[in-house]
Image 1 (cartoon, rainbow, N blue to C red):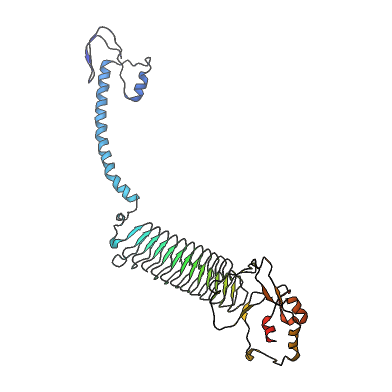
Image 2: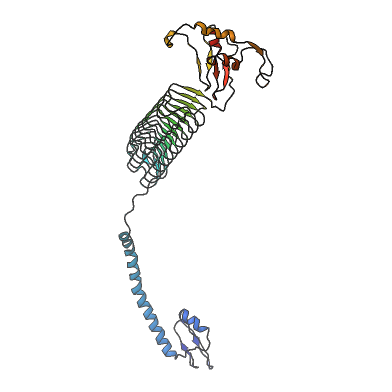
Length: 419
C-alpha cells in the first residue's frame, strides 16, 4: 500500500513517518503467502480505509468465534450418544485365561458356554463350541472345533475337530484326531487316535483304536484293540479282538476273540477265536474258526487247524525235541502236504477187517540194503539201513508213500512191520 508523509497509526500494526513513499505488504492466510512469491502482485490501500477494514475484520472475528464455540461444544456433547446408538451393546469382557470360576479355561466362540461352575470344574476348552453344551462334566480337555460339543461326561480328552463331538455321558475317553470317537454317546474308557478312529462307536467301551479309521464302524463292541490303518474297519459288535497291522481283521463284524498281527492278517475273517501272525496270515480264512495260522494264509472254511509256514519253506528246526525222552507215545508222520499226525490201530477207526493171509508173503520179496544219503542231505555220511522205495513199489505199490508231485518218496515202514 502507498503511505503518504503524514504520520498515521495502524491498529496492531506500525507507525510510519517518512517523506518517502514505501511499499508495505500485508498477507492473510496461505493463499496470501503464495502471492508473496510474486512481487508484481501488490495492493495499494488508503490508510483510513485500511483502519476501517481492520476494525471490521476484528469485530467479525469476535462475533464468529462466539458462535462457533457453543456449536463445537454441542457436537462433543452429542457424540457419545450418537456412537451408542450406532453400535450394539457389548458383552462384559471375559476373565483372563484360567480365571473362570471352577478352575475352568475357555478360549473360542461359545467354548464352555453353558458350564455350571459349581459342578463342572477343571475343564479346558479351546476352539469354537468346544465343550459348548457341557454343564456338569468335569476334568475334561477339548482342543478343536466342536470337540466334546455335547459332553456331560468327565475325565475325557478330545483333540481334533469333532473329536468326541456327540459324547454325552461317556467318561475316561481319549480321542485324538478329526472325528475320533465322534458318535460316542455313553461308551467309556476307550482310546481313539487317528482320523475317524472309533468314529461310529455308540456305547462300546474299553476299546483302543490307533490309526486311520481303525475300528471305524464299531458301535457296541467292547474290549477290542486295533492298531493300524483300517484295522478292524468293519467291526460293529464284535468283542475281545486284537488287530495289529494295516487292514488286520478288516472285515470282522460281529465275531470275537480273534487275534491278528501283521498287515492283512485275518483280513477276510468272519468267524471266532482265530490266531494269525505274519503278513497275510489267515487271509484266506472266512467262516472257519479256532484256527492258528503263523506265516500261512490258511484255507477258506477251515476249522481247528494249525498252519505254520508256506510251501516255500523246506527245513524245520524245533527246539526241545531232540534228546527229550518220552517213555510212551506214538510216532508222528507227515503227508505230502505237510500234514502231521499219528497212526491209530484201534478197531474203532477201521472197516472191512480181514486176515492178511498170503498178502504178507510180499515181505519175503523185499531186499533190505545199506546206504549213505547224498552229501547235500547228510554231509557226515552216516551209514543207513532200509529199503529202496522204488524196489518196494514193484513188489506192492501200497507199501510206498508219494510226494506232492506223485513221485515215490518213501517206504511205509509201519505197514511193512505189520507184515
